[in-house]
Image (cartoon, rainbow, N blue to C red; front, side, top):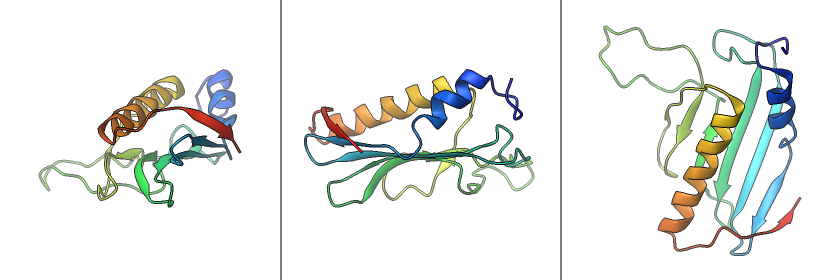
Length: 131
């Protein structure tokens, strides 16, 4: 196990994406920012991450990250979770909580949303370069 409670192979899997950009045939691109941080109540798994899909012009379309906590959508009398994991379903979405279960689940959920978004835009998911 890593210091942050995740199996070491999960840490290495996600950290391996850090700094990558996958350029699609259409000019859209996927951007991966991942780094280790000190585990905390807000980020118990000890990974700071941002996985995003962008237009050719650089506008974010969707994203999964933990850069900030998102507002709780329920009653003010319900304790809001302190964890910062969340996702943005559209470019205008301020974020909705994301239940981080594992690195594998995060990657599956991210790529599923990328495929859904590209399908809605009638854009093929064809990676032509990696930076």
